[in-house]
Image 1: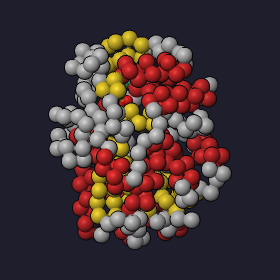
Image 2 (image 1 turned 45 degrees about the vertical axis):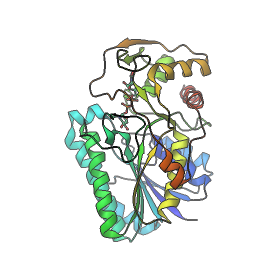
Image 3 (image 1 turned 180 degrees about the horizontal axis):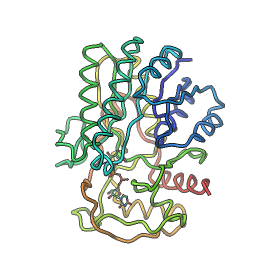
Image 4 (image 1 turned 90 degrees about the horizontal axis):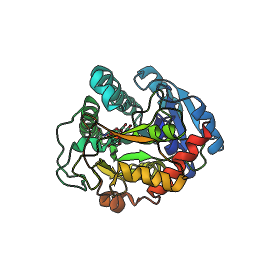
Length: 333
Ligand code: UD1
């Protein structure tokens, strides 16, 4: 069985991708330092995958560690998730973001080069588009200047990947994620940020479970149908499956490619709350607050390129995502 190295494999998207890789017949090799995840994720992954996965604890910025893992396991491809992702934190501490996100990718690419590994899938983000003039956005929509150091690292990393793909004859894919939500239907893995959640859905489920105060909806006076921001919320298992399609793609196609990974539909924050309430029967405690600085008003994906070239598309609804997110939250009690 081909081995696939998954950096950040204990994180939210990484852990679900490990399950999808296993289901597709690959052996996942996980690297994680648990800086934003719990070590129990690995045990739960072993349960879910009946455990042919390999795990190494360490930091992607540690070149000696990365060299040893690549030399010992000889993966066919790398999926590089390990990075920091909190927009506000990146404004407060940009050095940590440039060091972790940019340097991390450089170390991964250097150790791939030294071990002659030619395929890589990189975690990018719809944040590279900034506030778009027109929705949906295609991969050719012009990029605006990033509004945060986090966004800037994703733009820089895409450029680095494109340049190194050319110089080293790599096969590479940058996936521009829209908003991943939901959890594995088994409720054995899900989104569990360390500390207070920044993102909408973990805050919403924790507030509904009574673990924190009410959710604040950041602004209802935007120029959108109900006044709240609009996002493309994608079930994390659909997103995980896009990585399997992308690994297959990099193992058979040369060059650098970017793909939007979303559902192709926009939903507002209030629509997401309504979906959650209708599938769970729970009342979400929330109030309307001020706009959050730096928020994009509305963005959703044109996913035709991913459909046509990766042969991938979403199969799960927003209701499915909300149901699975709630089951996951309940399993944590
Ligand atoms: C942001 C980044 C995205 C990144 C992701 C990772 C941008 C434009 N987007 O997504 O690239 O991958 O973080 O963490 O930089 N909301 C509330 N109340 C809350 C939390 C959120 O109303 O307590 C609203 C926000 O205002 C937003 C929506 O929910 O409209 C989604 O927010 P969030 O989950 O934080 O994701 P993004 O900001 O879209």
